[in-house]
Image (cartoon, rainbow, N blue to C red; front, top):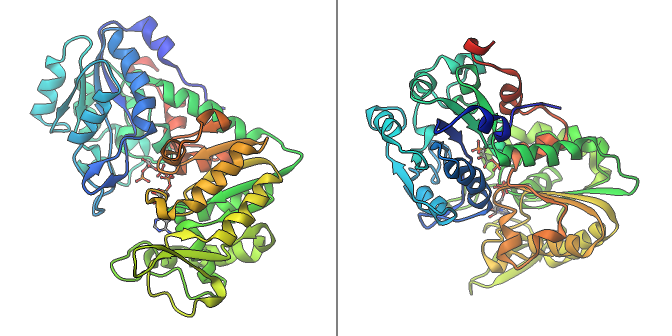
Length: 412
Ligand SMILES: Nc1ncnc2c1ncn2[C@@H]1O[C@H](COP(=O)(O)OP(=O)(O)O)[C@@H](O)[C@H]1O
Ligand SMILES: O=C(OP(=O)(O)O)[C@H](O)COP(=O)(O)O
């Protein structure tokens, strides 16, 4: 178990500090609009605690990845975060230049700044070891302008990027409240033993995260219920003519090339644990939801956007018989009500079943609020996806390990 210092220790040491706070505000963007989600509400608790205590809060965050449609500036994120606070979040359209450094210097006690998308600086994603990131211009420039660093970005803690692992080498570093609570919940899961059936529902778009970990966690899981992009990729490996891009799509082929061998290995090794969709749903010529069983599909000519009704019924039965259920990634494009049956059907069954349950995934956990489900009906609703699933397997999260084990040279 990692042991890191929390905001309790920070409060004992600092007053009116300039504190860099790394958040994970990576969010869905629909028609160019950042979608509010649990990450803003949860991180606002950490920001609010620091600002209310009179510190000058300098937030760092990322959105998307270079080259992706959702790779944007953070101006909208500042507004959404403000909505969850009793104070304005001042967006700074700079990361480590003079504008940013001056804004940090001018920040008054209790003020909150949000710098621009940290992934827009080349140092952030450079392929370096954590100690090398500490020497980067990005980390050095911002560290010189601040007194301390707080990492609240548990949901990005599996990424060894500069703003996540570099600062503990050069500034006093602490865990934010999201980091603290997510770590405690998700680490406990990796060490728990269940007598009854353990089920994992996996879907979503980041099949690479899911597929590589399925094999690692396979000894702890009795049944994997697949959907989303991951489900189609496994169906493709099982010989069905699905799981490839059609039209403008770019969700499948690149992930297939990267993961085909692993998918086939996992299917061979754990086929009896893996439940694949029996039917799929798509948008017909009347813009309505239509379903098709696997055996009716002779070619994929349109994107499949959800699992079908037969699959939902089968997965609900599996969940109903489970002592523990972990969910990572949505079974369909639940943001569109026509294609929410898979995701919502499984979540409803979990809520009705007396089981230990964890729902993970920044996007996926949004479905709970969107469809009127009660968060209290789940044991833990994580705002992490890839980080959460790695925690399930007990895999160390590099940003957590760095936060717990590294100290500035001046304090070594
Ligand atoms: N068949 C599908 N085609 C395209 N997108 C899908 C499909 N099924 C699920 N999704 C998308 O997966 C997203 C959630 O998956 P992902 O981003 O990997 O998980 P999270 O961010 O929750 O860890 C949802 O936003 C949903 O729209
Ligand atoms: O949203 C995130 O990951 P997740 O979708 O696995 O929860 C994190 O912000 C990490 O984003 P990344 O997967 O683009 O590095």
